[in-house]
Length: 61
Image (cartoon, rainbow, N blue to C red; front, side, top):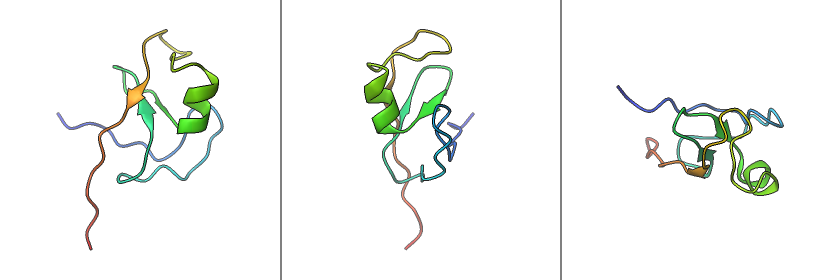
């Protein structure tokens, strides 16, 4: 099963999360932009888990 690369922040609804850009996720794949994750002290508001850097995927050139 592949990681779901969500394209929007669950907190501010920003749609700027690209597969090759920075984002933060928890073990349940809740996804947040970096500014929102920083504002929440890297704690997921949904499950209480740690938010960590999401792996990046290369995009086609």
